[in-house]
Length: 580
Ligand SMILES: Nc1ncnc2c1ncn2[C@@H]1O[C@H](COP(=O)(O)OP(=O)(O)OP(=O)(O)O)[C@@H](O)[C@H]1O
Ligand SMILES: Cc1ncc(CO)c(N)n1
Image (cartoon, rainbow, N blue to C red; front, top):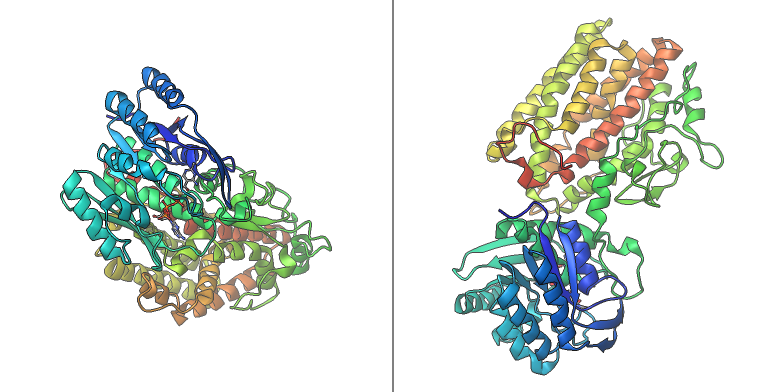
């Protein structure tokens, strides 16, 4: 049984700009859930433009480093990167034979992205020999050609054939990486000596920030294997994590050449999601609302934009410079993007408010609507990069949600004073059940594990919040609480671009275009407008709070799929426990 936190050693060169080599490895090992260690093979003066100078300490010094670690620490995995010379390779090889762990990931680094040689030409032979000791090797397309003694593969199929042949001959698995080809998707394929294959693919990111991607993938892979993941799971994890890191690399603004990836993006996003900070400050809404203008004033089209209502974005407590403020008063931002300017520049809704109260509500919640449109989940759904496991999770939660939402709407119907309003809520409630049934028929039927998935904490928090208001709060509060589900969902639908027919989620995106959604929004808006007009100033304030909190729950609901590790969805555990 590997320990929960695998101990992983990187044996590689340095990069003072922190994007490649030991620095990238340590960040990647940490991100993948391991304890990272590093022995230095070469001190490299390099930056995002290229390598300037390489200093090779005596091989005896590397041997001493390896002995020092190996004599003291039990290792679950070792990852090697730049080994520089035949003598260094031999040193590592001798040590691995004596003290190496079960998992050895060899990234056969020969040439950097910048084109600089990182392995002496005469050392290639030694590298080929060393690769045979590996659990898995992770060559890029050019290195694969050297490894297999073949011409550079022009297509993925050619690369896969080269790798399969080599794996069979040597008994060593290969990860074929198509990063250096031109395909729209980048695919990493694990090929075992017996010919079995596991592919993990992601959409190609149009970015210059790819310095150290090879190091990072190999180090994360070594860590997940060291943690006991099977090859397919480990590779899928590493590929998906790296995709997020590459996507956000440019935001780091490190260097003017090929910049590094943001190894910590996922950790920062999850930390921010784990914050217990309240979503809405106590004084974000005036205690009494005599008219919609009272909300508008507090919602803050003030000259400097320094005060407005609106629950804070997901980045509220992540402590990063681009996050929203902890009291949710001034800016909205998420771990996915910089804070946006304040309400004055917020987009108008595609479904216009039906009166002054709903107009004021929209304005107060507009930053959250923008956060949803710009969320990692919606963006990944639209660009097709959302992993299927996350999409399935989303569908499963949507089904759970609709069940309870329908109950909330029925409660509103039961409590409505006005017959037309009662009818509207009742019809919406049954409409929900129909959508849920269709979800099961068309989408969950061929995803059996998702079909049985119970409600997540995020889903339950939202539905319980809605049910509590629908069952016990004054009608204006209850109506305002259920409005964002109608309105914000329809707004997401309205903002979706047309996608190609072969887009992985084309059929799902099509479901957003149901004109019934718009009719629902207008009906719900009309009810909210009426109820708010009739309510006391105190109840109106409570209703606005409920509306904004529901908007915030909507954002959580969309984003939650990106916070779940598919390997944590198995059955068995009676209650999910937290790491302490
Ligand atoms: N533009 C990109 N978009 C998406 N993923 C990418 C992109 N570039 C690289 N990757 C990911 O990074 C992995 C490693 O990239 P690549 O094939 O370029 O390795 P490498 O050449 O060994 O990297 P290095 O630049 O560190 O030498 C790829 O398999 C893929 O998962
Ligand atoms: C030290 C080191 N290892 C690997 C690479 C490949 O990106 C690099 N640039 N530097």
